[in-house]
Every structure is written in structure tokens, then in C-alpha cells.
Length: 86
Image (cartoon, rainbow, N blue to C red; front, side, top):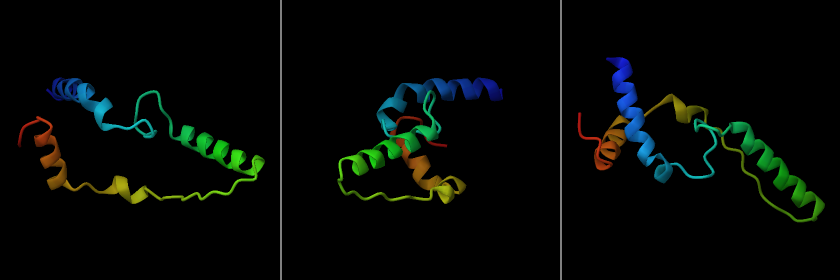
């Protein structure tokens, strides 16, 4: 039963994921890696240094982001996207 449910959810999510997940999202997306973000950031810093341009980098810590879920918000968004209520 678990595998059937997982497959159904996978198929339904697959149809809308491209409209939800932006091109800049690297983690938890098939064929994308978090390390790609690091390479992009290094390229930007290198470009700034070689062109003698200034810039601002901000490092964000997302550790807590993945430790909690606002289930009310998640339920309302899924219902709005057509996944139905509980």
C-alpha cells in the first residue's frame, strides 16, 4: 500500500514541480546538487576579484528550515493546488 501511495503522489507532484521549484533551487532536485551552488558562488567571487568589482555575499543557514514544517500552511497550499483536504 505504501509503495502505491508513494507512486501516486510522485506522479501527481511531478506534473507541477517545474512551476513550483525555481531554477536556482539546487538541493533535493533530481540532477541538481547543492555543490553546484558553491561552484556558482566561487565563480561570482572570482569574477568580482578579476574585474576589480565590489559585491555583497550573504551566507544563510538553512539548517532549521528542514527541522520543522508548518502543517497548516502545507495543508492549505496542497488543497489549493488540487490535492484535496485530509
